[in-house]
Length: 76
Image (cartoon, rainbow, N blue to C red; front, side):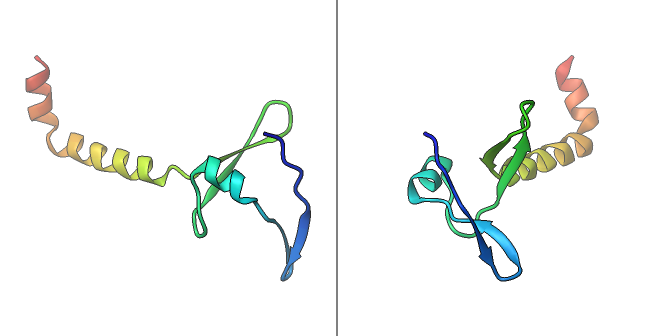
């Protein structure tokens, strides 16, 4: 899918309006955060924010710290 999007003035900023099809493929809706990652060719890759993954990893790290000794014994 290739989309040509125009920059539009929104208040004192510029913005891009994403069509429904693009939002559906991203699995995103109003209020969600999108992440722009620079690609080696100078472009950008747009992906939905993975905050849920980061939250889950923080919980896992907390558990690993609290139960470090028990996990070490179980690993033997």
